[in-house]
Image: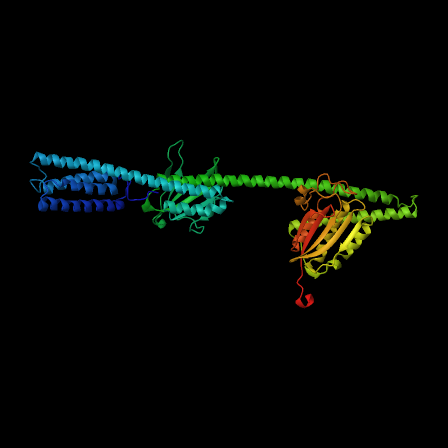
Length: 523
């Protein structure tokens, strides 16, 4: 991540190809300084213009570092001695004053060159550290704000490739080498790396910097590319690897680049481990909720099954041939059996409907129908069962586009809920009203109502309002009737809502899609 790959403060670790620029700058600057010194001394008559060489020394120091500055100082010393001190074109000096000037030139050149190189070195290091910090910040932010680690790995690979100047970067996840699978790649399209020189980052204990360890030599078919690998681990467990392809001329990544790719591997490992823990926790929570729902279902259904079965058993006993009951009592027992069997049938139907809704196997066949036609049978049953209630009906609303079977089942569930929780004499009102693109079918009662805090949960499966007792079943029901109603209405493109009724109890609004009416019929 060095801003200038050709620059090295100590001229160490520099490839021969990278010496071209420093040598060129030194030669050009020394040649220019020599021409200026010759002009000042021989043409203008300046007695000792040797300080001009300091400009060449500083220019060389800014490009080649301390070692380059020292070499430039020695070269300036030799050039001035050879070209401009008597005797000329000789390295011998006869005048002690001139000798002192030339020695001072060498000393001042070395000091100035070192100062310039040091300043350049500090600037280069600060720039590299700033880029490294920004790269680490972007990497950390991307992983910290992720919704899923896999969603940001492509961005991470692109960032590492651009920051480190790699040809290709990819991430493979798996518990071992054989199981690793590529999940993000900057351009290899999942292809394996060429068989180049492979180097693996070896982590060192304590504060000792990590180092690259050569695993095997490159083959001739690998070209000029080398492969680098950093293992991804979390808690000592292998999770995968970060791989990179780099031009061989670029050399081994420096410390800054090594720190960045190592940090990327570490943060990916932590993020991936967190995702695995979160997935395990979510699975455990789903299993816990599933067990709770099963327990709630068994509890509710078992009570709702036992109550009608007990009534059927008692009523059936009165119908035995040896029973002493009269004709009227026998007829009442038969009515009880029929009523409780109907209740069991509705319970089983709701359970089957709920399973279809949750499995996504609900089929909806929409038709344009009138509400009073579809709900006629349900209303007749309601009239027969609500002889002790005050019933108000107003179903002369516009036609709707619904599935008649699902609508009748949803309506029946809401009406059964109203009958179960309203006392004798309480009013029940059913009305339809056009509302924009919907027709609102409202079933409201004058019963005790539902607390405001329970309203949003009425349509949840297996939810029962705490402390709410029914007229005939003190258990409060199974809590699936309104859930089935919500599923049916939403499947038909409608919506459901619960609110306080103007009659004092509960009101359930079923918003059903209105049917398109031709203009001539509207007229």
